[in-house]
Length: 425
Image (cartoon, rainbow, N blue to C red):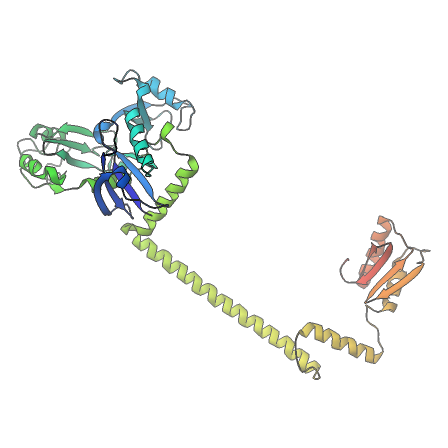
């Protein structure tokens, strides 16, 4: 399954010529294609694909709140609760802002809330939907916490005229710091040691360890290395977008949330696609393939053994028939043919079978209530019909108990009492 990860352009509402920086991936880790294009020219991830929108770091603010009891993620008035909690902290009217809770938010525990302009987000999503690229998930470019929530480290992004430094993933309770790129900002965030690369360590940094890596976009690599005094690690916007898309955050909440079924299906498709293509799952895929192959081989071997055993039993039945009755040359249905031959021998010997008239009459006479005599007797194909006899349920049950001892059963049928051998009619 393909995933199209794109950056939402910051600023005013997007227009027809607004370009989106994007990355197309099939495994969530490697971009098969990356570029920038207007919304109508963005690549199509396919019917089973997913479109993930990345909100730039400078379009978001972060607030820490503690939800009251009863205000869980599924609470119907959660939006109103967040407005009340954040009203004193926000410069804008809460009605003009969009809120999104961190994954796994629970009442009574401090949680992060992402805040951005609601009108800007709605216009950006509507422009993509109008171009045939509806967004299924919205993720922040950087998120609070450690590296499990998205990209972490020191990043220099932007343009040569306006570069800025982002310090992300500095701790579970640390919000991403965004500062204009400068030597002071590098020292303040810990990207360099005070006094230069060989200066003394600062709090939180290993005294004898190597200085932390600083990742820079190609456009700002030169200015970053000049301020650092050492090489920077090249890190493209597409790599950052894919890392953000792998995080657990989803800002598509409240009015921007899709229905639960769609989210579940797309999440399942995303998990399957990751398992099917991601490099870190290659060993698991091989192990699963070996297990499936072993199961198929085992099932086929078991089925072959069962077929051989069944064929041996059928051959034994046919052999018993031809050895007992040598006159049978062609075996079609061994049990039926054997029953027929036994019946023929019985007739030749002048003996009767349990299905003949005499045994049936004898069994019926011993089982019927005293004084009950039939007005007519019909016999055909091993079935005896006694007309003119009507038995009450308790009388019929008593008669069947007596008949069962001899291997017969009786039941009313078409105004007569039907007596025959074997199961109840």
